[in-house]
Amino acid sequence: MAAEGSDGPATLEPFAQEPQLPSKLNQGLFDWVDFKCSCPDCGRLLSGFRTRDLCNTLDTVDYRIAHHFYAECECGAWIDFIRKPAGSIEDFDMRVE
Image (cartoon, rainbow, N blue to C red; front, side, top):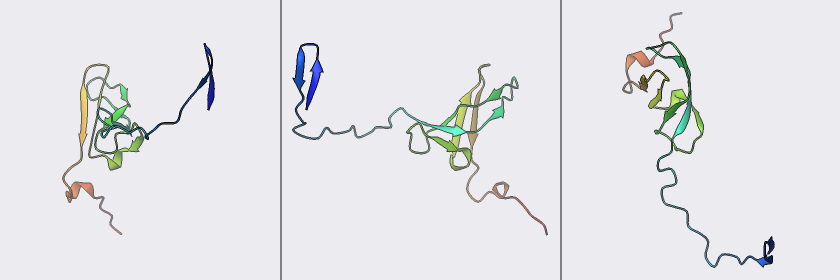
């Protein structure tokens, strides 16, 4: 394959061996959480919640599938949401017919 460079045409050779991806692509990343609430300290509307529970590929996920998500408000408050233990009765809605 030829490409035009500043010194004229250049020839690009194919890789002798396919490049290897790093073993931990997601190191230091997170996923965005689709959730909004008011800051309990100042009342500002918060969005931009993050989680490291899932794939950590900067995708946006529904808050109901994250076990722990968090955000920091402009006022400095740090807000964490942590799912209650599985089987907790508060995780259920009661319906009476």
